[in-house]
Length: 332
Figure 1: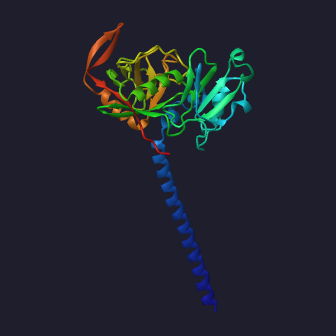
Figure 2 (figure 1 turned 60 degrees about the horizontal axis):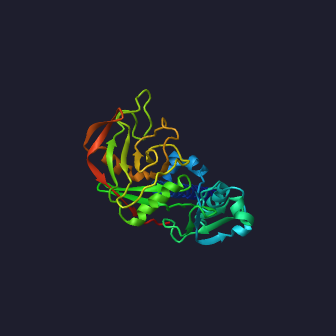
Figure 3 (figure 1 turned 180 degrees about the horizontal axis):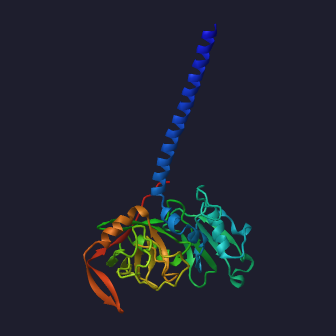
């Protein structure tokens, strides 16, 4: 009897150990798959470059375009919802798109907003904040524009939205646009996108990081800030398009992947490094997704010839690289 009782206890102990080992194994398998899935999701997330570089700066931006009234289906009626600034109206839309003060990944219920902020012109409608949903955020419906329009409007791009392709012979550079930081700049880019061509748009200057910045774009201590200046420069002035100087807009810092104007445009550049020595001197209106930075590095390695611009040594591409904008199909 005693022997049989001992065998039973040993059997139960062995069974318990096996169950424990099985549970641990299942948990480890789940953990590995979860980490792998999150890694893949992270690498393909359009917000990754903003998250790594400028998430706080971008989330604080909330600007629109004055004297513009966007159309669209109302998800919150302005007659029932009033605020005292356009920024608060913008943030209310962001909060419904998972990108406001709360953040999160819930569906983007609002992607555009319209605010009436001129007391004299708006009268009883002063403070109205209309939150809307567009059928196509890359081609928002516009009702009216001009000095006679009393409304201020803006667009919000949710996760996986607001990405355009800058197509070159060396690959596509997918750019996440920042309409909440640089609405006027993004409006011009959307005009180029609608034209389906960008004749005359090209890169003509290419400079690597040299020994001044590491592969992640961080400046190496005691190294100079150029030359080379770790950037690719070009123009977005398309033939047949009248370009109007774009005033400086609130924007994040110039970091690796930043797409920014030189002055008020149409000359622009894409940075290969974190240029913290250029504080608030350039309007950043987008970021190249991290997965596409290698295509930009290819251009940086192309043959160049030296030149001097206003006493600054620069490197000019022997053969300009032509480019055009195109839509990027994204899935949610």
